[in-house]
Image 1: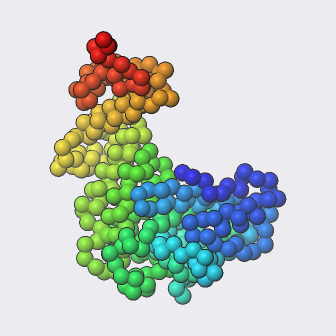
Image 2: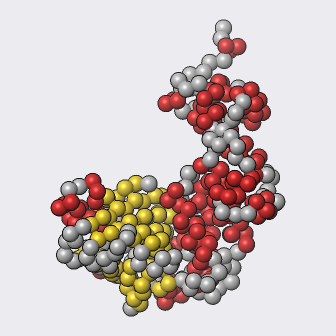
Image 3: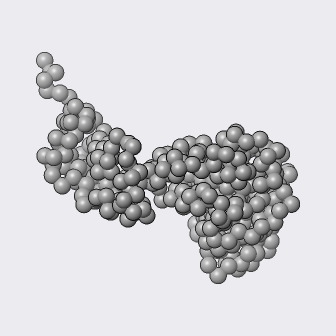
Length: 323
């Protein structure tokens, strides 16, 4: 993730101004109002995932601070985007479109970045953590007029698909391969908004399956170095049952363990082709990706790619081709 601002990088007396300057550089810049807190912690990171931007804001202060997205800021740079906001911890107050709501832990709301809003960050004993998913309005096959009543409102907690969206957003900051989530995000966001509007084709079983398969792929990538990785460990890390794990792969061309092997070999090849790792022995690269036996790795690699592992390294020259 790319850091937008972090108040711990400056002197405590400079943190408020550092935060104010950083807030003016967010994807949807805001003005900051209120007296300077005695204690302030604020950090924001952003990650690009396909056509989506994920912002993670973590905040703590001993006084209330208000941020405003004003008409002036919108005129300077209207992004033509919408935003889903998830409160992970803490609580904040936001107002847009005449609707003022209090976001508590686990709440999700929809906002229009082309309309003014203001947010109040109350003094809190602990840190407030918020995830904001920003995307082009063109990503939604729904007219602006239909969406307007939804801006500045909460998604009902019992609405089908809301919990899945919260889980998906929560996975993203720690994702090993964020780009893998782009398709799942697109389907889940579209389905959630359609469900919010009472339209058909909301969050379908196929969307739910895509989200979980994407999570499982990411779990595997994060645990490739574990030679004992098996379906039970994958299921536990992905927060699903072993039975559901196998069910997710019933209609695919691979089993969970075949996917582990495929991702291990892909990662080995990526590292072998990396010039920065040219001096690292092949055996150590294979072991770092979960292979216990070098001979098994060599056989699997040749079977998958048609060449020996050493042949994909930078600067390799096939002796048989020499004059």
